Image 1: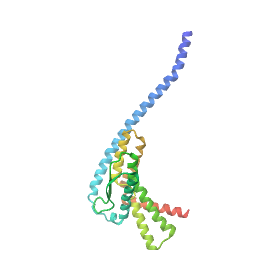
Image 2 (image 1 turned 90 degrees about the vertical axis):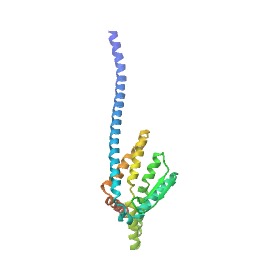
Image 3 (image 1 turned 60 degrees about the vertical axis):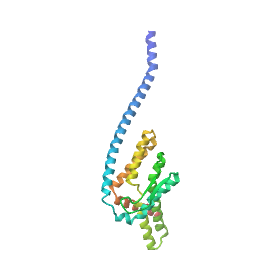
Image 4 (image 1 turned 90 degrees about the horizontal axis):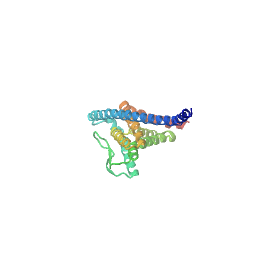
Length: 230
């Protein structure tokens, strides 16, 4: 009888420990499966994005001269200037810069290789911040200060041109995607933010093109207008 009670006490003591071990093992298995699944999904996305970017680049070669790009050239200058200024702010050496030129590639900033994911991320998204601020500034002057008609027309054109080139380019999205993939392998899980950002950039280009860019410009104008009337 004593032995049965002793065995019962042992089981009672070991049962919680056993349950804890089972829970830990279950968590390890679940995390491992999710890790494998996510790696598979990211690999699939990687292939799809590479194919899409390659195809898109080939199609762009057919459009060497685009009149709409020429009409909105200040936005391109602001875009590249934002890349350039962010490099200077972060202490990243710029090797070559073209703020605007005619041809397939209308502008670019080439800088030294950067190991920091945060710096790369900020350099890539800098045009979205810089161009959007310039656009909002132009629209604010129009709506809050009511300048003369032709000045308003000029500022509206400048604001729309800036907004239409706020989005990072497809090469920027590609660079961010592979930079994120590299950082995830280094166990920098904060870098996972790069995946949705790069996908948003690519999808905005796929779904909208110039139309999406123009909608963004009118959206910024609408936001400034709402701020004024409220």
